[in-house]
Image 1 (cartoon, rainbow, N blue to C red):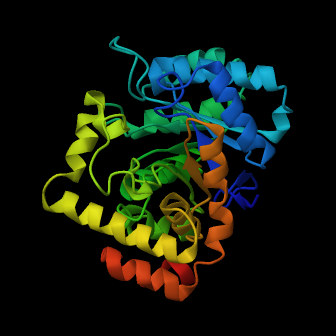
Image 2 (cartoon, one colour; image 1 turned 90 degrees about the vertical axis):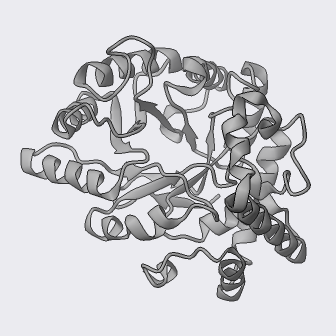
Length: 332
């Protein structure tokens, strides 16, 4: 396993992490989750991602039971959670000081942990002053409930504003951001955040590297009825394959599959390897519903070594969406 620093911090996270979104509590119970997490841990994965919103808290409960059952040393783990969507009550969501603290108490209780290593503001809260949120997150860290705090799907302007408030008020600044990043969605990570890597030392733990399964190739010939996009609950994802934009996504997925065949790997491995090649990515969060998928995903580390500049240029050519700035993030 390769380990990377989380931005400019001293914390090292596995280049491939393991997340619980969609699977834990929805597809997996404790036993299946244990098998997947054990397979990942045995291969060197130390970063396990969660959130209070995943399966309405059940994902954290399951992960907590797995961690207790496995008996791994707490110092060997980097566990994360996120606060924002905690329930239906008027103060059960958002990033007010009240919900930040109560959300953290509830998450730690479900995870059965004394602290998490990372906590994210799951989305920006337009109804709470950023200063209130920055102070609350800083206090979460200084209280020992988390070691580092960060954001998820915040704009570069919002992250910079939070960092400026922290510097002015002598508070703990955000360390990391968790954005969506894959071959189909790359502008924010490669261009918008570029100054933040240099100025703030921002780390990234990216989600949806397979673009909700599109880049795995499973939808290249239609939507299987037993797939995620075949379920009515995910109709909003199915719509991403409609129209001109959807046609482009499928074309990129098919071209990626053809290149993967040429390189002797699976499309999923190639899509993950492509994310790993970005030096600004601290960890790529993967998901799996069975141990065999975990093993397949982990092989992406070897595939990344095959991605020469020439291969990366070929991918850029058929995707046709490389951001204009920075000119080449591979040389940053």
